[in-house]
Amino acid sequence: MFNIDGAVITANSTGIYAAGYAKWNIKDTTINGVDTAIEIRAGEMSIESGTFTASAVPTEVTPNGNGTTSSGSAMAVAQHTTKLPIAVSISGGTFEGYSAFYESNPQNNDEESIAKVNLEITGGVFNAVNGGSVAVFNQDCKGFISGGSFNVAPDASYYAEGYSAQ
Image (cartoon, rainbow, N blue to C red; front, top):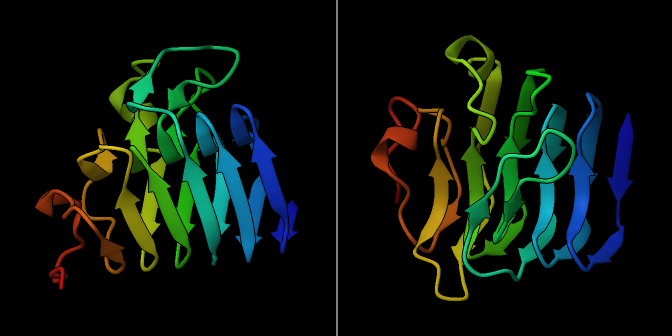
């Protein structure tokens, strides 16, 4: 288990690359990455608070069975070739990138494997910056947003049942 509280991480590529299955708890942390602040490919991640930025333009995803896949998003979720489960829960924090939050399937994993990707956004600030026009993009999951603030409204299919954006 990784408990990161009050850290400051600055990286020339990716701030945190969560490749193997692990449990991550992040709060009051600042992560600045060029490609991404965080990319998770397997495991569980809970983000309570902090500031997460990526400066790469535009958002791009490239298949990679042995490394990172994403650039241009503050938070990237991209299931690995191992097809292990992913659970991401965000209750707070500020995310800024060409795309603030970006879930994709670069390995073209099958539907059964992608069904193991579970997302929950209940709070936080998500801003598309540097000319970006999508605050949240999700290739595979629906109904996972029940809170938060977005400078560009997410696709309505991303909202949890009964939730309406303010």
